[in-house]
Image (spheres, rainbow, N blue to C red):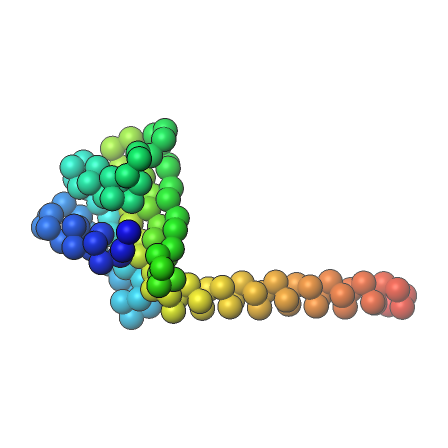
Length: 118
């Protein structure tokens, strides 16, 4: 599945969705209102069907490292499709790794201070 295929399909449906973007267009968010478009996108994302109903999510990456997030709306609420470029995904991973390292360093510092009786 490619992000391009999803966006091509969405753009065929004129007024059945709304669009917004963040991060200079590297993060694109589609809010999908049309039941027919919702069904079509769900079939593309999960050709074997989404099990269950409600707030079902799909998260995956394509071969280029771009991330695809699909959140099924509850009841009659719209679905949301978020497409993030590899650059955004890499930046988020770097922030997470830095945050984790900072927490480890803080824990080490606290442990050392406890041992030294500070």
